[in-house]
Image (cartoon, rainbow over all chains, first blue to last red; front, side, top):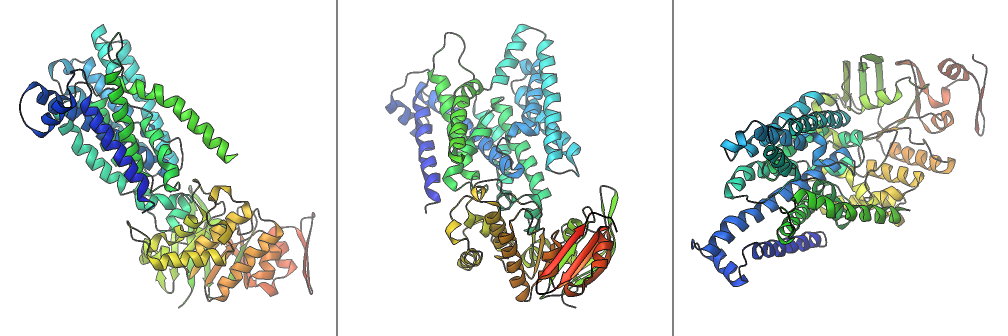
Length: 329
Length: 256
């Protein structure tokens, strides 16, 4: 029971945050109107705002945050490195390149879903390239291949930004790179959810082996853990899940890195036990941050989700690091 | 036949031949020490014996069945292996660390069965770790971590225990303690194989000593029959060995 308590608390916080997110927004709706809109299928203004604008956005925030937190937790356990995060494998970079290319060549202007579809393809190609480069090698080969693909893809992204055909394209690319959940619809949910759920399932399959990996790869192998297969599962799960998340939400850093650290002390630092709480913490982070971007009024365009998360998250992470260092000393 | 048998084993690493023509039998109930100069292939021999690297040629068989045919999980339940360098990457408790030794016996998901919990408690008590059970493994001293790792290896009561350098980095008291534990395990009818640098430990505690040089078995002998001449040949230094009430070993700088 004691092990379930942190999960329950996180879940409760998540439900509260999700409800809160449904009640706030640009259109000033009283809470009673929101509740009525949720319960009915009336095509009135309140119904449209709550069911077609706010609800898909909340669900996307939950999916995106959960898969980022989960993937981060799996990669940190697999690579036995507290600094591992989904971006490490080059998959986010591949998605960014795909999206930027869709905008650069004007596909995005003629077809609304070009950007997410290109991003998804980019993520898949990046994952395949990392796999091909790292084949036969160990964990280090995987990290190096990820770094190589990541820097190549980002170099091409900056090249595209540099050569952009017009300022509008540049601004659109930057918007995507800064991450956002604004103006997302059920179509985005339908596009991303199957990939995110499939990726999440693959990532969860690594759980039974992650604990033993705390002893190093050789001891894990001696305990019957198929380390090579675990590596493959983590890469495939991250490619599907984080690739799809990046395809609909753009680049959102930091969540995958920090979410596992937030919950690790709650589960006795056991790598396999971190997975589910990390997914919940990631969902909570993205949801709260996205709600905040809607509430914070700026003189210019609304704050980018990725930007806000990094702005608020970085000092908090620093505080966490300092506190952990203080405890270890 | 019972025990572990290596027949015609050859192992390549990074395109280099590390072990060649290894024929060795390891009987249950004995503590086998593998000695040899640096780079002789001791760690590789132990990993091949544990079934963690596939030999390029030859077979490794446990009780007459090739390790490759036993299956990953089944083998993991019967054999425990401790590498030379041991580290824990997360501050999990000593109790959880020891429980990791039961990984191959646990269901993939769900809680730990009661029998397993009892085995963990027993292994912790046997390893004199009860007062450390809730301590993060990253906060242990070298000697405590070595004890916890050995408890982790023994918790599933494996019939084959393979330990690379069990005394590395330990002070004499802890090193003697580790040796005594390995002797106890062998006394319970298990096969215990260790690679060891401290020759006096090999000669005093092991039943049998296997000398490895340049990837081949140079000689093997009962521990109380090993001679100074054999050790001289192995390490290419002059060795003085005195067997009395206490074993005394001395090396001189001159090469033999």
